[in-house]
Length: 147
Length: 157
Image (cartoon, rainbow over all chains, first blue to last red):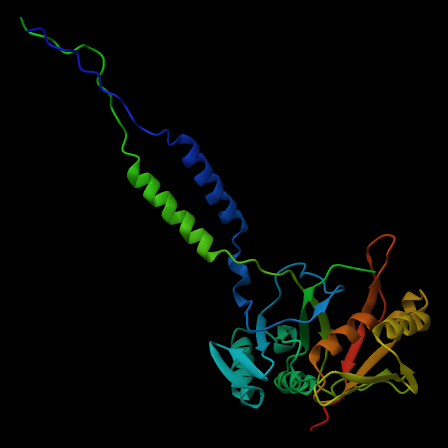
């Protein structure tokens, strides 16, 4: 009896385009991912301003204080009332002095919510001033010029 | 008679599955950690503690801008000196008129913001924007006005 020839039918999908696209997607997300914006807390809705300039370089000894609309400072993972910030600011000033830096040269970055009472922001600034901090950066959301 | 396998058909297949697994895991990681962050900008203000730098007697007193608030924290009224202002655009025009392109004047003038305790902070940022400069519509660049800005002591409620 004559033997029949058997044909192997290959049903393999061509994976090359899919892998190409996937690598392009990975490259896209890798480039856009910014780990430096970790201090942007979603609970803070910053006020908008068209004059707020992006920082030209990294600030010297930055201390970021985030103030919610309920006047709580987000510091070190805790929600601290403004009046309770005194010991933390004192510690920050002591740490700077121990590393032979002047607290007056440190930048205090204030990220306050647009609905925060101004008096609370001023109280926080006053507490910083009492601990010899002088340089303040008020952070705002950049708004495109519409005029 | 023996049938021989046809020569030259041995196919060496690479295992793609682990690579694709890893690639998809990487993709998932980057997609999950991706967040659309808004662009942020700064206003740099130097504010020593009151009394640390006492102003010389011959220096001009600061331009006082008073902002009062409604019970809900919105802006009720704004005054510059003794004049009532109707909005931040008018404040900006007043400051432009005060400085009128004189950079020396812009450097010397100091503005003091005197705000009600409960006033929403966004009004302060808008006032600082109006005082510190404007965007030139022709060149689309920022024209600086007053850079010395300070707060009056807070009024406890």
